[in-house]
Amino acid sequence: MEKRFLDTQEIAAYLDVNEKQVYTLIHERGIPATKITGKWLFPRHLVDRWVEASVTNVPTAEPFLADEKDLLLIAGSDDPLFSKLINLFRRANREVVTLQSRAGSGDGLLALRKGLVHIACVHLMDPEGGYSANFLRERLGEEIAVVAFVIRTQGLFLPPGNPQDIKEMDDTLGSDLRWAVREVGTGTRALMDREFDRLDADVNTLLASAVETEGHLETALAVRTGKADIGMGIQAAAGLTGCFFIPVRRENFNLIIRKENFFLPQVQGLLGLLQDQDFKDLAASLEGYDTADSGKVVME
Image (cartoon, helix red, strand yellow):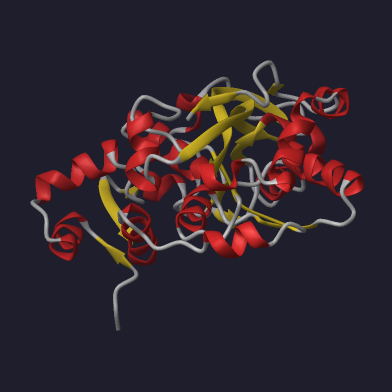
């Protein structure tokens, strides 16, 4: 039976690279990985997706997207405010069929590379946090535009009142807390793994009784209902569920669009709403969002 997880030596052989280069792939190129008992493990199926997303000169299906004026396809990370934006767009554009897949940032980028969607919603990190132009262009080519959606806050979900008296990530070590965790390959899991790595934590012990969740709201609800003691996600989800929240970092949540699709009417219709007061009011009704730059092209 084919192994689901490969160690550092095995992934080096799988990718035909020197074992020392694997650590560069982890910290500089974003290869999917998680650290358990001080050892890096690599989910084979996510590594395959990562390799596929890194291929250059991928044939795409732009003619299909360009011809479908009444269709808007979106894939990537989930976000409560973005879901509200989609609903706002649907009410104003009844003739457009709008479909969204909350498959995670990595799969959103892959779908965009293949020409399967108009917009990818992503919050993947480069080694410095956020994005670099090279990070995106290596994966998607030169002909892309990046539009700011929001800056949002990621942090720790805890039960109301913070009964464990957690103040920062360091306080979660050496405890019997049951974690609600996202799947390896999501941006939030990457942030959590990076924080554990920074603290040189024994992840295997910390996550021994972990519950895997599919989104920010599900993670927060797992904590709120007692299925887990702690989780990581965005502040908006904590506010919606009544969880106690401890900020860890702010991140850029951006929309990536291939330039040939940028001026399609359905794409411009969605982007135009980012400047409307209705959208600003929706953002103000939730916690942890900064919309000062929403709608601005931050890379082209």
